[in-house]
Length: 25
Image 1 (spheres, rainbow, N blue to C red):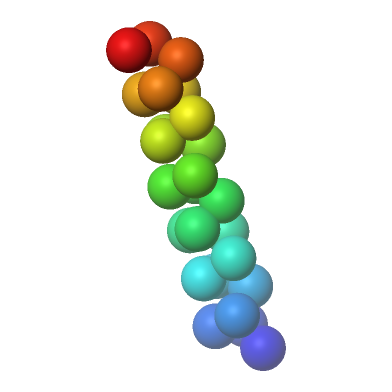
Image 2 (cartoon, rainbow, N blue to C red):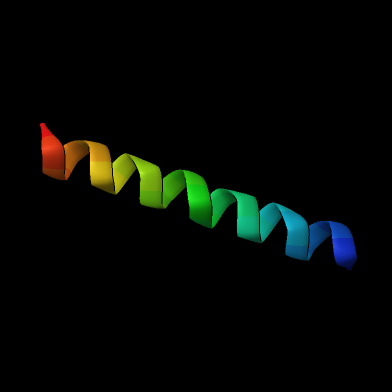
């Protein structure tokens, strides 16, 4: 379960980075 939470957090961070990159493009 901890692994799922870690993956979810990492995925959320990556998604946030992607959104920021698109916003700054």
